[in-house]
Image (cartoon, rainbow, N blue to C red):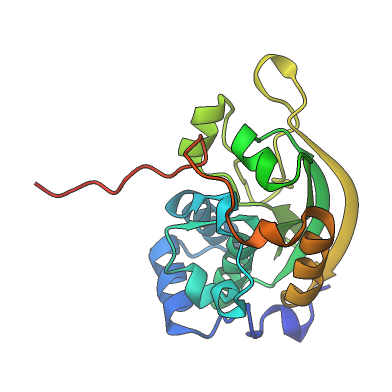
Length: 224
């Protein structure tokens, strides 16, 4: 069952921030049911922030939900933090979950950044307490990015877990969960950064590869 901590603000899951509250209320609009609000929040975090794995930072300030809400590009862990914070801001108990996954959402540029590996450690998602049970949801990959890779975006119905794509085009395996890292009331940033550097080297938090690929966000449109 949820505890007080799952509705209370944390250092990173700063659900009491005006920025987070404004983001959450804009996402849910007039929706009043917890499930409807959870779905609206998921869709907003998923698609309003472009998934960019090259934005991994060592700056703790960038992992606070209030900072993530202002970003236009980010990766799975900060996006999960924002979903959890947004949920708490509208009265839905929430916590963070992590797992190691084998990911075929990859490009040569990203593989270079990861030292040739295809295993992502500490993939982040949120768990929301809806209809008396915890439901997992990862808002990482925005719909436009998924279209570039030829897969449907993950959808969340508030009832079933919405994790990662098990299959890609033609039935090929896209995501495989390898290890569960557990759930947390707030972000264990130190543990995550230690694991990233141990697995991929210190370059994972500073972009060393150049150029563009499918993960590159489109240029902002210029108003005429």
